[in-house]
Length: 318
Image (tube, rainbow, N blue to C red):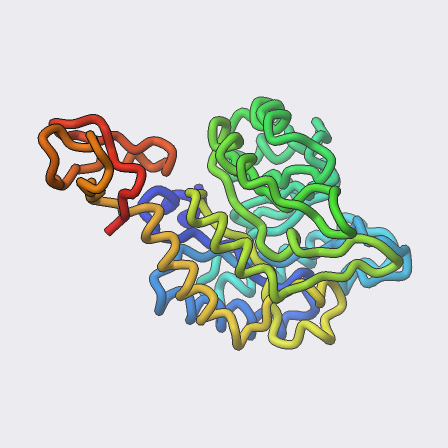
């Protein structure tokens, strides 16, 4: 079982991060090493993400991968697995990658966590082939599906699963993120929020994006309580072969993560609520008191333990 996945509950922030697509071994080693260094310093539970095949590009002429510009065969998958093995040995990073066909998972023994792309979240054979490996599987919620419908994807798999929100096709040429959906899906499995795909603009021959808005959505998601974040990162995204407009610039990542950690800490470690006597009847007899709050791992599941069960509407979190 993946060590990254096993640390989920104890980590202050779980992170899936890396460039959209595997460009070459040298770049992968540079990116994975840099990301691991940042995450080790910030004590973030990190797994390196990169796709070996971008099978869902808008145009058939768009870059798919270094070994599979047209159609991917089993020999190429074996060679990609060797690249992933090298990355793991050189950097100590665990690997997460997409799979698109039911025969992919068995050819990637050195991949630690499998990922099912959003467009394929209903593909039964693909989900079952991931489950057979026994590896944790991250299933991205389709842009066309409701949060509630993802319970059936979890049921199909039957093993260790995460669900990732990456926006819905609705709005002014943008994807729209339903923050309530994050809470709804946590009934079925741990929930990851995909900051960068959620700011894609999906019209035209080439997908656009607004990377400057990704940290805003990330802060909102960690504030309400989620299990991890997904973000694509690149040292030179404006010249990347895929998803450049929405990828985070590597040099900006540490500052973004430091801010996200502050928001995650608020969501995860609430200890006190102060009740103010400015609200009539908030505390029997007036005055203020400190109410101990127990946190069960979900920000919607606070339980107050005090003489009064009436909490001020003007309470503040310390």
